[in-house]
Length: 381
Ligand SMILES: [Fe+2]
Ligand SMILES: [Fe+2]
Image 1 (cartoon, helix red, strand yellow):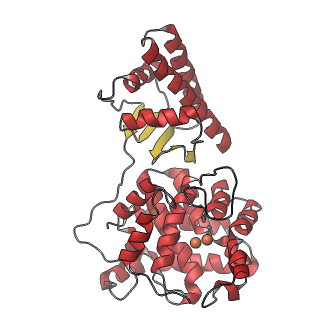
Image 2 (cartoon, protein in one colour):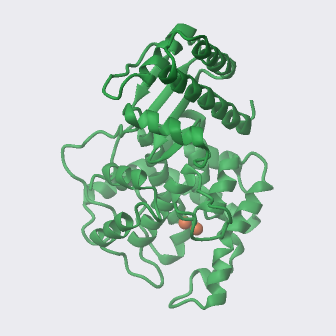
Image 3 (cartoon, rainbow, N blue to C red):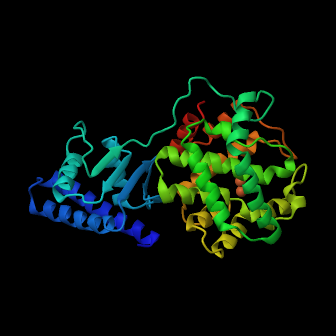
């Protein structure tokens, strides 16, 4: 089933679920009208579950994300279903293949029951919170960069990523010189990083330390990749979705290869014209990725959207109250964090306290507040 169809299918499931819950409120669970909605929901879900082992819906902030795709927040039934889930403190809902009709009926009845009534995970309907799976380390770790970098952190970085960094550098060099993406190379890289997360270290300890401002673009994409995948993993993305988010984060700034280096590395203030040229890295990157075979659609979207803010402002300007994809939302947090903590030709690394206050102040406008909260839990601040 193509990705876009999945989004549409889940939207239909939610519409039916919503109708079932509302009708239980109006009549009773035994009313034939309710039975019809349960039946319809069940057959839609069964159809989807024939092609995949699970279907997951997550509540991230005010957004409903189904199988990795945000659902339109202006739709009344999506908004209503978000409210129902929030009321029941369910942030993550997974339907498993083989879901029996009776189990679904029970779940719908629980959803419709009074606010205080609890709702439980059943064999084919798993409920949960969107929460961190990062283990709390006994000792706190410093963050890489600045003068207070603990030696052991650097050693850990060297051990875990020296190889990965070299390979990614290779991939990047090829992109830069031949304007050609080694899709397999990027895929491999993402797989290695995902494996690295099993070690459950603080993602901050994996960040590449900046050697010179020349390496900035390269180091930056690695860091944004690490911080984005760590976020994605922690909110519950797995498998192909986590992988696509990884690829998207590594390629988010790919459009910069079309911006002259003298503008990219300019010391001092940019002119209005130069700023506009830099801003085109979003649209140029998206167009370039769109024409590259084997690149997930999500990477095209993330390249386009990563400088768009949560409230739809930012660039490129997109009309009609556009909300960036959840992957782009995570990338933009990682992006701003890494840009502020890095030494640039025009800027010294910012103190952690300043970075934190900038990000927190942007929660709700520039950034998804739920993701900001999650991010600081993730890097243990
Ligand atoms: Fe960018
Ligand atoms: Fe960036």
